[in-house]
Amino acid sequence: MKTSYDPVVDALYVNFSAHTPVDSEEVAPGIVFDFDAENRLVGIEVLNAKARVATDTLVTAAE
Image (cartoon, rainbow, N blue to C red; front, side, top):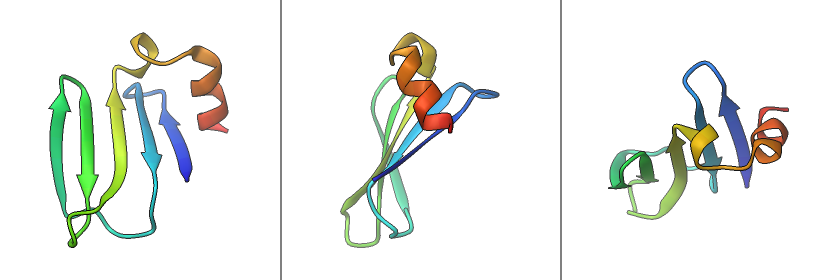
């Protein structure tokens, strides 16, 4: 699992797999699940992350 944070757009991404996402679904406002060709969850994007995730988590993800 790998996390990354983009402070410019305030988005946190949690990547579970090396598979390429081919489909996305917004499962809740600002929460997007990415799926591969086999319909497996490969990542989660959290938009407006500062309002949803602890700041220390974002700092760690950005490193």
